Length: 105
Picture 1: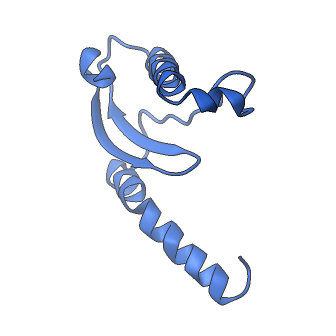
Picture 2: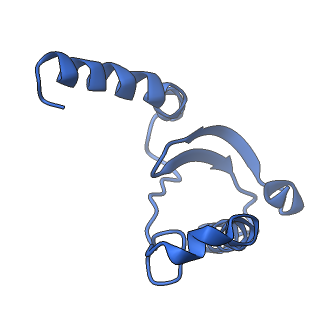
């Protein structure tokens, strides 16, 4: 809903327990920092309203998201990035299985 409101297209997304990978198509009229601020701010407000117990956990001060994010607008192979985001969970499960097999996890 937030992305539709600002004409942002979600191309790929993978939600993990402690982080999110997302590939967005952002209109040129919006700055990346503006979009990230809006997404992080609005989702944090919604999460804290929907799950009040989250306020009791010590995240980053009284914030849900960390300040950082990684961005690339040119120079990286888009297909490789999409595959990474799409299949990351499968790869992580395989790595965890390998670690357990060798007694590392």
